[in-house]
Length: 125
Image 1 (cartoon, rainbow, N blue to C red):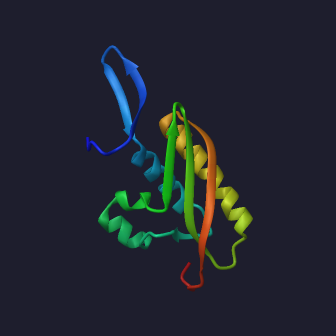
Image 2 (tube, rainbow, N blue to C red; image 1 turned 60 degrees about the vertical axis):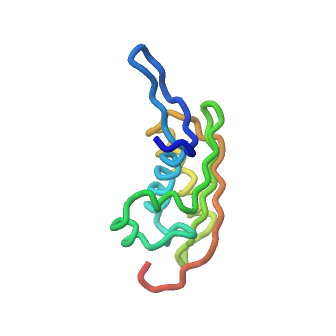
């Protein structure tokens, strides 16, 4: 594992311990975010088609994760598709990210902040 990555301990047993990098939580949050209708793309990220070709690591762009003990705070920056309700899409992002992170990691999500970076005016949303 890279030494500059922050990790947190999920589980410890007689067999050893399970540690997860905070970037893993960011990728989970990024994947969950891109599944929400109305989210055009992650801010500061490339299009979903290119992401799928280059790998999942790019999905952590636009996501900042802070892990404290067994709680996590997530900041998400998105580009929203024109015509969608910002409050509704933001709430759906918060719900989807919370569910995905808690189910996959067992951590409690304390806070999810959504920042709308831009509105995507293209017609192929």
